[in-house]
Amino acid sequence: MHAMVLRRPRAALEREERADPVPEAGQLRIRVEACGVCRTDLHVVDGELPHPRLPIVPGHEIVGRIDAIGPFVRGFAIGQRVGIPWLGRTCGHCPYCTGGQENLCDDPLFTGYTRDGGYASHAIAGASYAFRLDDAADPVALAPLLCAGLIGWRSLKLAGEGRAIGLYGFGAAAHIIAQVCIRQGRRVHAFTRPGDEAAQAFARTLGAAWAGGSDQPAPEPLDAAIIFAPVGALVPAALKVVRKGGRVVCGGIHMSDIPAFPYALLWEERQVRSVANLTRQDATEFLGLAPTVGLRIETVRYPLGRANEALADLRDGRLQGAAVLVPEA
Image 1 (cartoon, helix red, strand yellow):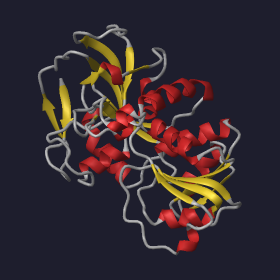
Image 2 (cartoon, one colour):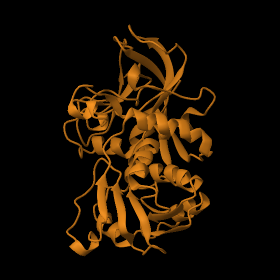
Image 3 (cartoon, helix red, strand yellow):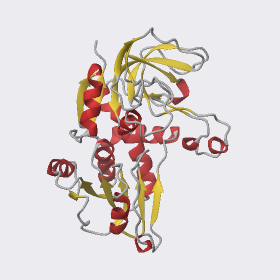
Image 4 (tube, one colour):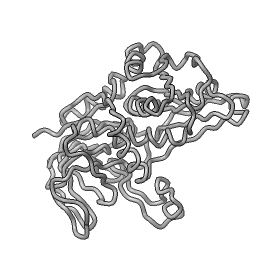
């Protein structure tokens, strides 16, 4: 197999040839068809997330075909297409796992962070954390669903049932969950980098009721806002535009420091919440819902060997939608 490997933070990924991995008990080996490039991967590569397992193969939006099955695995078959997300393993016995919050597990493994991920021709995954996907669908379009879609879905659930929703940072996650919101009859307000007219126009083509810069006021009081951009200054900005009792949900794994703000912005029972990881129930819900929405997934394809270029384009804001790596034949 071949893989793109991070050896130290803030370094370029290096191509490496390895022996094909052998699945152990309870595991599957996946021949990767596509792997999305997520902002979390960028946080790992740029050293913004602590204690990655190094060297590490990044990538946790994996779509591929099973080509080997370890002992004691039931319900899967060679050649079946599956998706592998960020949550790679949970302990099953800590208070969070037994209390229905496995996303907060005390002893987890995360794909592409503490276990090797999908920037490779093959990947190993726990069968209990793999999800069946449509055999006939485009694997490149499926890949962003495995994190951008799932985290967007979990963020939307925490945002509540409000009808007017603000989305800050109109990238991979926002462009997916915006379509879900619109299908549910909600009004989407897309906040982009100031002056990013291309992103604002893109949001409108997907059905956003309004699109503008994050420095602009919303055209109506919002029931909730979801922040996907890793910019702490957007928290008080979002609090300014949500109504009394409204919610601001921080959907990223990493964010710059939130600046001090007056208590008046939080008063009147406004809430600020964060999203951490995902649960398998989130994946079951969203991957079941997604085919019914008619999602338009905007992607930019890169050969696996150009993973550093894809990461740079994401870092510098040159992408519309999601970057996806495709292993070379």
